[in-house]
Picture 1 (cartoon, rainbow, N blue to C red):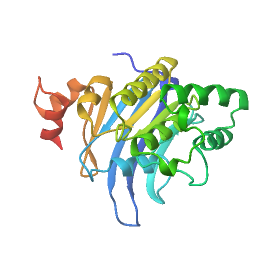
Picture 2 (cartoon, helix red, strand yellow; picture 1 turned 90 degrees about the horizontal axis):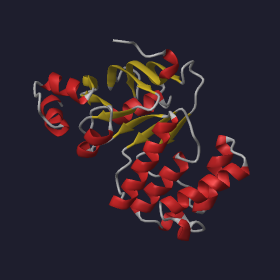
Picture 3 (cartoon, rainbow, N blue to C red; picture 1 turned 30 degrees about the vertical axis):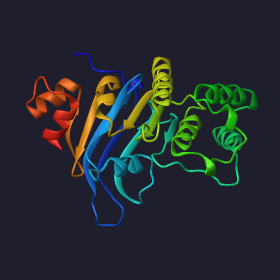
Length: 240
């Protein structure tokens, strides 16, 4: 079996241990890689350590022993879409997009083209000048996705993206993911929506009680569960 080139790895994570307070280890021995064009699903029950894993690789936890490299040489770029929408109450949707573009260093022409395309794709043109505090949960989630897709990074880190999305928005999001994967971006996505994950993810990391219970393709997960014909949901139920 031919091993992948290191340049194909856009996210390399090795977490020895991590927690929110010193001596309070929530996750340990979690390692995985995301390659160009790959969609890796981070799955597990509530409280298993998925959010802690993402916070650790983003460098948000003080008490962590971990090595994380983005891009083949560790100098790549990423975009993060959080589970809970984060916004400034005094800024409109368009101003949020503009602020994010400035943070990413986008020139105005590139920003304007990308922002208007995303507004059309997610059906948010009519609220571009509105304050997000008045948005529905689904609209706030769309806003977070648009902020993440303004740029074209090496890897997307997406935390529970389907919460609050209607079927049309879900389809638009999946279409964007597919476009970015064809470009060569990798995706790490945590999700509870296992039927969708089974259909779109290349491979999985199943976390349970702060450890990796199984990882690999669906066939690998089935083998670990001892269920050769099972769905991802049934394997999840057996392993988590």
